Image (cartoon, rainbow, N blue to C red; front, side, top):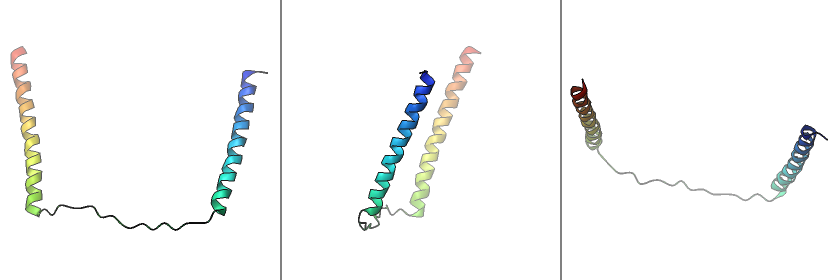
Length: 84
């Protein structure tokens, strides 16, 4: 028997076994009594910031990023001045 034939036989056997198991699992799930699940919405605590506070927060974040970019540009200029 060639390896490819054996491989095909094993694949088919595994496929059949999986299909049989899935059928059994699905039948059990359908036949079992259904339980009702009650879920209550969970609200996450939100901080109450005013529009002005939110704007200030964004300005601070953007300002820090801009300063960081400026520092990087200065470092690059210094580097190129040394070697060019």
